[in-house]
Length: 360
Image (cartoon, rainbow, N blue to C red; front, top):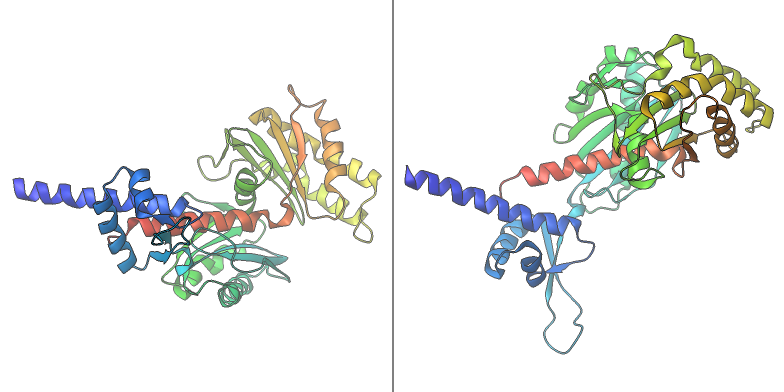
């Protein structure tokens, strides 16, 4: 009994040591020496070197000689081998698909791509996702073209397991079971789905205008209107993944407002009058969400050229009469790329979980 417990304790200690070194290397922007790893982790130099040997054998860490800063032998630096796999974020809807590839840390390794087309059918959408993933893998600058993790943003509700549960925008996608098709095509990858606007909200937290501890509402205007809420720096999901789906309330009439707005746009530009009218049309729904969440900020993101600032100003005026505390209204710096940016971040997190769950 004592021997078995001791063996278990030693195995757990080795895992803790591995994770301590891996965490430091994952977060490091530059190669780290064994001495610095020992100082950062609190482990002995001998223990660090033993861990590094195992991680190098597992093809998770690279080493290189560093340029000496003074006379003497150059030190050896170690870095996490983030280029040993590819993480991909996809945003797909009935009117097109976009995607971006990155290394395991989520650093982009291929250009953002956007393709327009009718993808309202489930088989069309599945084929488009597979094709774009393969194209992004081929274009990735990483030495390895192996797909480690794939996150797909969709216009629908996704359950806690990361699988599509409900969508009124593309109902045929559920019948086609795109999830199963992707898992069969890419069996070695971590595959998950999420709501496209919630992914965009995550991107706004990590790279956009929402602070780490802020509560916010994200309003996205494109081929449809959608919203997500952020509470204390975290995307709100709700019991079924449907938090923020204010547009599902028929009396809000966001689809009709979007249709009128689209019809008013000429030559890719919307007049000030059209923007003001549109803000008035959607303000009741947005106001209800603002009253429910009490945000510091409302972030406005639109794919209609030249409308973001005007729409933000018009919504600020409308919210003044519909909120107890008027939130700051900002425009998104990410725009239409936000769901892909958020999806890539989720894929990178999944890749990290895979790395840290392995035995070395």
